[in-house]
Every structure is written in structure tokens, then in C-alpha cells.
Image (cartoon, rainbow, N blue to C red; front, side, top):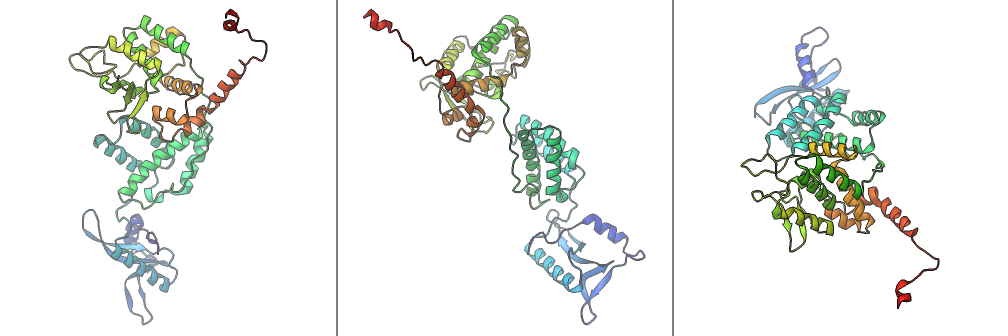
Amino acid sequence: MQANAMTFNPAADEVADKLQHSAGSIYRKVLDKRKHAIRGLWVRNGRYYAQISVEDPTTGIKRVKRVPLEGAGTDAQAVAKFQELLTQRRKGALPVLDRTPKFADYAEQYFDYYKQVKDAKRESTLYTERIAVNHWIEHLGHVRLDRITRALVNGYIAKRQGAGMTGRTVNLEVTCFRNVMNRAVDDGWIRSLPTENLRPLKWNPRKRELVDSSQIQQLCEAAVKESRNGSEFAGYIRCLAYTGARMSEALRLRWSDVEWNQRQITIGSDGLAKNHKARVVDFNPNLENQLKEMSARKAPDSEWLFPSPQRGGADRAAKTFRETLLIARKAAGLPKFGFHDCRHFFISMCVMSGIDFMTIAKWVGHQDGGVLIGKVYGHLSNEHAQRQAQRVNFGPVVLTDAISA
């Protein structure tokens, strides 16, 4: 016997109660073989109902409800279904009695909850989820949680793909939807997810145009020339490019995160990294030189690598360098340059330097042991090898040292 064999539809019950004494809509007792009324079992217009008293798990108040017995076409089937329902009640496996909210209404409850719970989810995460969930609301916001089916989910996926969304985008949107529905399971509104066993869409990552060292240098020089925050911005850009850190991760770096003796820097020591796990990046020559240069001119009244220019008497980290980026890239003629390009630069340079994917994944905070790096950047190692192959010379070689000797 399945726990969801019986489903409550309070709206239908309310209508049934109102029509109980209407012509053609009278509830009649179901009789046994001896023509005695079976307690709690009713029939109306060929549909069977069980009348039972159930305690609300939230308030503890007992209420009498008429529950339709789905699948019962005869008196004998209705009796069997009624017994199943009573067994469910004894086991505490009855569905929720309250009217299940619509997805749009419950989504608002979901976001309100995480706004109130401190540090449960970052603001940027909720912002991303909100954008995705709004698309789901447009598609099925009017549907009650327990009525959302796999067919509705599949319809959403097909609609988004038809609108030109990539498989990766749709997969992320499904994840955000699943987060809301998981919470609905926790709250007792539904018993299982409509996305259960749903396979993610396959997608081919687009080939990102790679920035090079000369462009990074060009951008930094333009920032120093055009902005009051130019020197700090240049240090920030180079730090991103030499560590592979994400934008917010780098902004929160403290000088206590730099281990000069071990020649390492810890990213995410505050627990606010994307996966909430700190990671260590070993010094490469460029990173070490950059940190030494920054240390020589660091603000004596700040613990941050990138202190806020408007911190006043308080010691605060800079919130963003976006305004400086807009100024610098316009002056440098690099309109498409973004902060995240520095992370791709770091990973790409590591791949083309022959660093194994697992080590790179550890440095940049991937939890898959290098699988994603191999999928997105693996072609770079092949391209790099092919370029190096063109340098092989099978002709006469002049060995100057041997001649001079």
C-alpha cells in the first residue's frame, strides 16, 4: 500500500458540503449486505467519500473531513479504500489537510524565510535563484504544489529551450526550482519531488575568447592613468589573474590569509567561498611578486588586501571595482573585458603550462577533481602542444657553444 494512495482536495470538499442538500447532489450512506449503514462511508453521484476525524499536525485541532476515495467504483472497493485510509491515519501517513499553496505563493514564503535566516544563503545566491524562480512562476505559478507534475516540468524545459536557452542555463533553473520544492517537502506540503530522477540536459560549453597578459597589462596601465583607485584596481586585477579567485573571494582577502613562509594564500578563510570551503593557492612567481609589491605599499590601518577607499574610521573591504573597470576598459579599448576573464586566464595558463587538472581544480575551488576543467579547457593543452610542435627543427642546427669551445 502506498502512502499517497489517498489524496485530499479540500476545495472539492468545501464545494461538496455546500451542495450536500442540492437536488441530485445528496450524500447517501453506503450500506453493507445486511442493509446497515457503514459508519463514515458516503456516496454521492457515484463517487465514494470517507468521513474521518484527523488532527492537524500544526495546531493539534481535530477536524472532520470528507475525503474522496479515488479508484473506488463499487461498494466493496470503497470499503477497502476506507480501511486503507484508516490505516494511514493510525500510522500518521495522511496527506496534509490544509489547502496546499500555489507555487507562486510558496515561492514568496521560500525567499522570505531565507531573508530572515542569517547566513543560510548568500544574497547573491538568492538573487540568482529569484531570477530563475520568476521564470517558473510564469509557467506554473498558478498550480498548487501537490499538482505540479513531471509533465509540467518537462513543458517548462521544452519552452525554455525553444526560447534559445542553453542546456546549462536550463539545468541551473531546474536546480533553483528543485530547491524550492525540496523546502516544500521539508514543510510537509508534498511527499516527493516532480523532478525525481530527472536527468540534466547535455550541453556543450561555448569556447570563451581568452585574454592574454598584454591585455591585462594594458587594462592596468589605463586604470592607473585614468582613475584615483587605479593602483588598487591594478593589484586586484592581477590578484584575480594570478590566483584564479572569484571576484567576491578576492575582495574579502586579508593579509592574515597570506602565508609568506609556506608561500601560500588562503582563499575563503571566512567561510563565504562559493562552496563554503577554504582553499590554498600556492605561490607562482607572478603572484608572489605581486603580493610583495602590494605589501610594500599596503595601508597601515587596514587588514584587507583591498581596503575600501571610503572606509573612513572603520576598516572595511572594498565592495566593488566595477566603476573603475568601466573607466579602464574604455580607455584601454577592451569593451568585453570582465573580472571573470581573469579566472579563465589563470586556469588557461595553468592548463597550457602542463599543470594537472586535479591540482588546478584544487587551486580554483572545483569539487570534481578536474572534470570540468578537462571539459572546458582540455582543448587548450592540445592546441598548446600543436603550437609547440611547430617549433621542432629537423634541419641543420648551429651549436654556438660547441663552436666557441
